[in-house]
Image 1 (cartoon, rainbow, N blue to C red):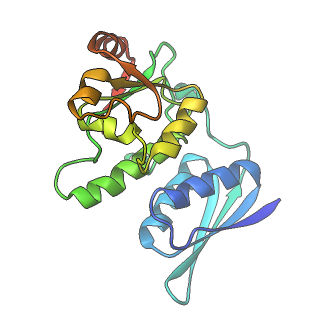
Image 2: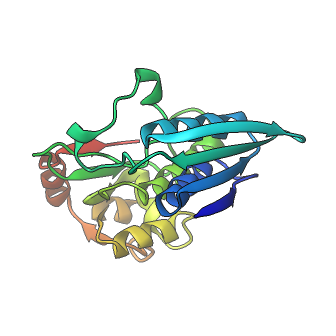
Length: 214
């Protein structure tokens, strides 16, 4: 089955997420994008999934990308069964985390309502993209911890509240620092997850197999 994915005008990581979902359900897809970064991300996705890839630039700075299954998708939860790829192909936007055989739970720590240092407007865009991308990880994080200004992501009116609620509905445990909520006078505004304490937070972090702090 073949389908066309129109990802024009969409910011990273949406084009590669849409392409990944489409190729999982179809043997051949065409993806339309309007920036070179999306072309490269989807090319790397094709390499990672062992799909055939071709691209054609059309008028108006639009690229038409073709992905074709050449066999079973290389996607796997077994790290030892991952397809060989060059180092240059490993830094594309990965939508999965293949755990080791004895890996502990993945814990994501959100200590700020922005991502990175520098420009807050950019940091706001990045944290929204990061949290939305968490929904694509396989397996999902076991726990998300929000402390300091990170608790502002879990309150009413947050731009990422819907994504956090979807993660919670999928079984992700969301811990919100009670001391931080009181400090910012947001105790009554927390709209997702559970108010927690430093003992639970420290215990969860100490028991993590992988700890991610964007």
